[in-house]
Each structure stands twice: as structure tokens, then as C-alpha cells.
Image (cartoon, rainbow, N blue to C red):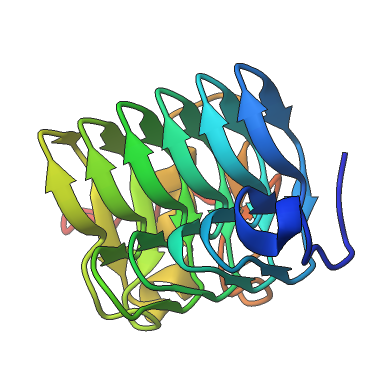
Length: 217
């Protein structure tokens, strides 16, 4: 399932607005993308999913702009006790409170192997390159372009377990470093990048290997 159009009205263009799914309760959204502009006037606004409760969002990405008020995310506006894995955002995200490159608000959920390279504009509280708010959730191996967005990875952390959520420079992205980190040691090829062609990592792209130099060789 994919959406390449413009999604700007769902539930009165107020809440639960998204490019693919406005409200996901216990379901799975996988291999989906949005390339249209997503605009909502209130909360739970996301490039792919507006609100994700007990559900899974896997291998999904957004390239369109996302605009809302509260809990606005490049991929998901709000994820509660859900999982987000291998998700990517390159679109610009703007709102007031709880604005994040990947997820606006993560509550008791997990966000793993996700990335955002879009601009983040939060005019109120809790804006982050990865997540605007992380409330008792777990975020691991997630990155954002800190040259594009100079703020923190997570706007506010409340009783959470965050192992790796950090910003990388655009130059580090160009080198393939982030694609290598996102792929990690998995045998199945999930993240990749064609160095010199792709500025950022892509899902399903060409595998990147680490280059090491040894003084004795």
C-alpha cells in the first residue's frame, strides 16, 4: 500500500491525519510510503500514520511535508505501546508541541533503526530530531541530520531507555556511515546507500561496508 498524493483532510482535517493510515490499533503497517503533503490543524499528525496504538510500523518512509499542531511526526504522530522499526523521514515537519523527525510522541513503545533528515520546526515545547517526546519508551540505533536540525535528538525524555539516538552531520551521511550503522550486523539487507549518488540512507539500497585502516598493513 502506498500513497503518492496529497492527504489534507481526515476527520475534519483536525486529528488523526496521515498519508497512509490515520489510526492504527494493533495492526501492522509495512512497506508503505507517503510522498504527499500532510496537513492537520490539531494533533496526531504523521507522514505515514497519525496514531499507532499497540501496532507495528515497519519499513515505511515519508518524503512529504508534515504540518500540524501537537504530536506531529515525520513518520508517526503518536505511538503508544507500539513499535517502529526501519522507518525513514526526509520531509520537513512543523508544529507546536511534540514535534519529531520520526515520531512526535513515543509512549511506552520502541523505536529502532530509524532515521530522519528533514527540517524540524517546533514552535512550542518538545521538539527533537528523532522524537519530540519519549515517555517511558525505548529508542535504539536512531539518527538525524544535525546539520539540518541543530536541536537535540529527543525533545524531552521521561523515564526512558535510550541507547542510541544521536545526530550526525551531513558529511557523515554522505560517507555512508549512517547507512552502515542503521544496517548494523543484520544479514538481510534493509538499509543501504549508493555513495556519491545518494546523499542519505535508503531502505533497500546498496549495502555499505565499513572502511578500516591499520598502521601495520
